[in-house]
Length: 210
Image (cartoon, rainbow, N blue to C red; front, side, top):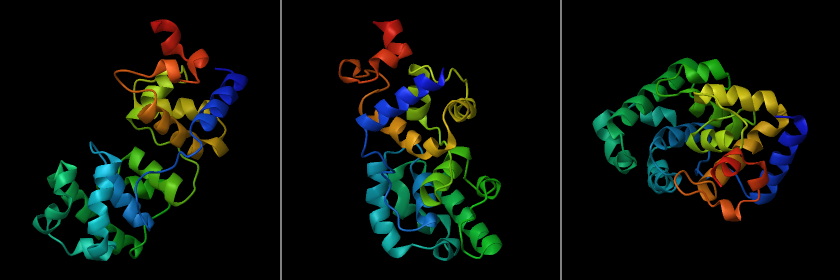
């Protein structure tokens, strides 16, 4: 993909989704970290309903670190995969308290070393909470990148590397939000709304499927 093509895609995505931003509700980097962990296999809307109540009671790593899994599960059960999420959130909280004085580390390697924190979760926290240029690759970013011909990578990390190679770092944080919104509201997995998509002429998928 040429620089001009990439610039054109970025411009069209930004025009189509000027309101794109993180849709998870949070007040601190730690709360965002918890919300992102809860969002695995769960909608942001559901997570926000859960955290709206939960964060009123449990808002710091110190509070989570004292809980048992049985005590945390009732708060997060409706998010699904609650046993594993409860285990990871408690372990992650303990490590943040013990190793980092209750503050979420900004260092990427330190983030990914936390229990339950993979590359995508760490990238979201880096980009959204700390403003560090990052490219979190979720299912939407992965799908849109492939359909637009930005990447044919087989893994999220491959897609991340391709996006970083094509787009300048100052675009990464906004671009990933644009791509998430495009995947969520236009470029659906099963029935993409190609007829109302402003990126049709840029889309490898559209050209091959029509």
